[in-house]
Image (cartoon, rainbow, N blue to C red; front, side, top):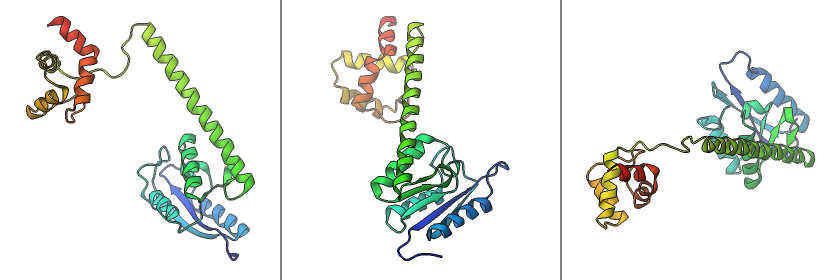
Length: 220
């Protein structure tokens, strides 16, 4: 039975093609049971065949988040964390969004319900572990880069600009042309950048400062 002044909750159900995933019926039963226990006004949003690797490209979830931001609902509930996201970092980011926009996030299997003191404390623990995970990844990445640098391996993105393009920029700069003027010249001539976008003064500066430009100057 719904109690007066109860939370208006979106129950999000994600259905994928994996046979090992929790069925939509089980997800809905868990949400409805919790709604009955707390007297929520529950509205089910169902997403079919969506991946939980990212929060992107999920139109039903996007609509749910829009409704929450607009203040039309008080909370978003899922039966299990993996129905919402398999990334702890993404989940932590959603917890921050919920806090900022003043709606509650409820995850039944983790005991998270940010509308309650205990559930909010569990959310903080989750965010702490997410931050630890991000720091560990950053440390491993930094260590790997330092190891490669010590071994003399190339670091960062390799330039895909042709030697002719690099030399053209060097020659133009050598004639005293401003960076913006060089960028305009390259755009007018239809010379592509490394990413296929337009040239800007900052792009020209990057090329001039790159190892590719220095190598081309030595070989010219």
